[in-house]
Length: 300
Image (cartoon, rainbow, N blue to C red):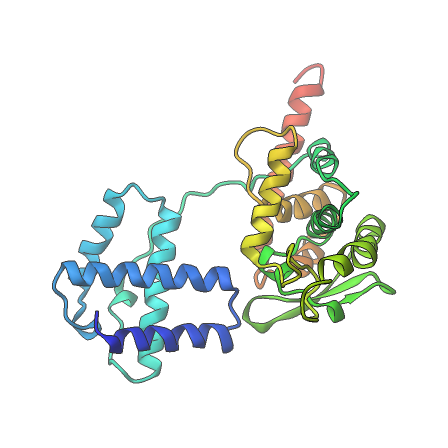
């Protein structure tokens, strides 16, 4: 691809960062998806973005499916490219968006995975608390479970966003939306110990900044860094099977609903724009109740 396309992609990334306030992880996904399509254009001898047709996109979709990619992955790639073309429409660089004609593949519905209470205890037990990094990791786990915030929202948390008096955090969510989320006494104690005995030591050889969670060098902890830490905690625990860090968010929502929280409250705490995004957790709790009944009722 020529340099003009690279400049265009750079301006699109800046638009996602500044105007849409997307997380670094999301932006990297967009960038990867678009660069992948650029390679396809080179292979198909398509000289310009304006020359891409619906027929070309159909060929591209066929190649994606031949790779046995999940429908959700294909949908994400098409969504990235549709947004990229919409941006070019906005900038009046073309007159139509060929990706607007593409029907998204129907995504198979899967219930979100979550940790049971005993599994959460195993995760907390896997954290050491006698080092500065251990205190940070424990505080990280406590906060994610206590608030259900996304990993990207957690990495962007700053000192001023945490109110220890009211036990709340100000979360900067998707699309520049902000919300206040409370946290309980366990998270409160863990966060205070981290600030007093962990963060200060980690910041010893680093210039001052106000990001709440820091890495071992004292710099801001990235979303990718948080994922690495959580995966390590999971590895150190006795838990088996397929586990991913986003399960802590699912666990937060599921446990709230299981213990009587109403749907609207959980929606607000999670920062979901639509109630339909939250309703999936009712299926999880209903399935949990069904299994409990089948396992314990004498005439099940």
